[in-house]
Length: 94
Image (tube, rainbow, N blue to C red; front, side, top):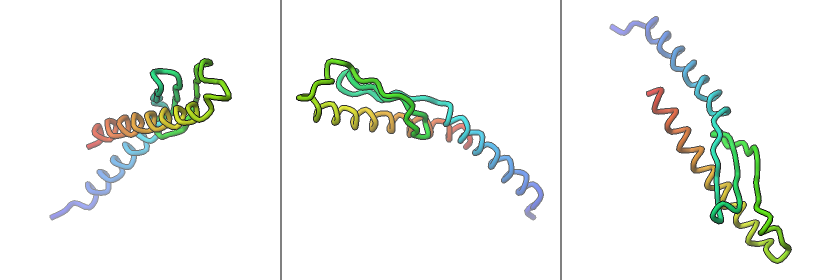
């Protein structure tokens, strides 16, 4: 026989753990890097971009396309690291 009270209690505990993880993911910062460190993106594990650092050496009009590509690559690197951090946090729940 299934104890409905215990199931509800477990569901509430899981819901609280998930809320705690979501809150923690807002605090975890990851850094995406491209161009050997020429572009760095710092974001939360939830994907909110906090800072962008661009090396002065690529801030030239003739380097515009390269700079744009490096920014995209750094964002994607940060996104991948954020997904990895999220997966690690989710493992702690299960």
